[in-house]
Image 1: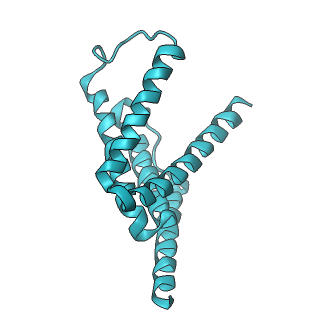
Image 2: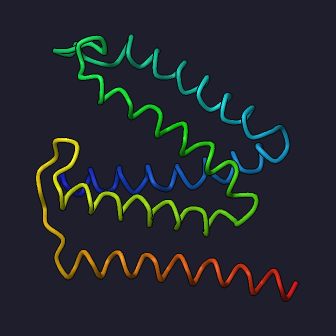
Length: 153
């Protein structure tokens, strides 16, 4: 039952990212890419501080004690937000989202396969290769569908 709840939570997180990308793409077109990214991070920081102060149990380690390479993860979030705010108004939410998911799953499978970043090794097998191929096919189909619609309209 717990696995189902965690999968559901991850699905809802993915849905929230699509809504966020769509809203931020529209806002970025109106007020600017960096202003929108700034707003996202300021509000995110404020909410995170409140959650840290009132909801997070004590941890064994602080940010000052963590391995330095683990702190680089924050930079990837910045890249994601800026990339989506820039991409969504130009290629659409579906094309941008499937591109993100394709990149995310492809990198995840490579991290699993090689055990990068201190993760357990889970080798690529035919099912995983097929998942990558299907995601790239979905990305191509959505993108070309968008282009055909633009050409017709």
